[in-house]
Each structure stands twice: as C-alpha cells, then as structure tokens.
Amino acid sequence: MLNTQNNPVTRAGMGEKIRGALAVGKTRWGMLALVFFATTLNYIDRAALGVMQPILAKEMSWTAMDYANINFWFQVGYAVGFVLQGRFIDKVGVKRAFFLAVLLWSLATGAHGLATSAVGFMVCRFILGLTEAAN
Image (cartoon, rainbow, N blue to C red):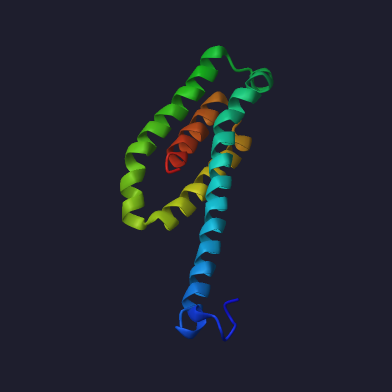
C-alpha cells in the first residue's frame, strides 16, 4: 500500500520515512527479544547453583557452611556491582555496558567449571554477582 500512486502518504513524500520507522521498530523488537533472552539467562545463572547444590556438595565435599559462604559472596558481589554499575553504564553507554556485562557474566559462569574448591566457587560467584548486577 505504501508504493501505490494513489496513496496520499506516498504523494506527500512520507513513504520513505514510514518505511524507515517500520525498520527501526523491527530492530527495537529484536533488541527487546535479545534483552529478554539475556535476562532469562541471568536468572538461570542465579538459580543454577541452588538446583545443583546437592550434587556439587557431594562431588566437591562442601559443607553447609561452604555453600552458605558461596551464596554470601555472590550477594556481596551483586551488592557491590549494583552500586558501581549505574555509573559505569552512564559513562560508557547502555549498549556497550550491557554487552560487556553479558560477556563478563558468561565468562564468570564458564569459570565455575574450572573451580576445584569452595574458595574457587566463591570467587566465581562474586564475579558473577558483580557482573550480573548490570542487568
């Protein structure tokens, strides 16, 4: 309908502007889908340790205190990150900050596989909390 000669919008020269606006709208919906996906992964990362705790406690000989400390350090990292991320986002911009946050929390999540002790998990969880706070 936008390309017909009888369309008043096309005759007024607005057809290209409307097509441009529609393209931007599609891009925004795509970005929204990516942010939704990243946020979903963020919450899965947070909950995964709770689900895996019985298995990991057995495999890695964690005590209840080790598990509590691992969760404590995640919360400390999240609190520190929550305070710092706002200024960081303002300084570098939302797109770059979100990209870096997703990249770093992905690396932190992967680093859990390299942790061989409760202290290693504490460090990984702290970094995960620090970076996930940007979401």
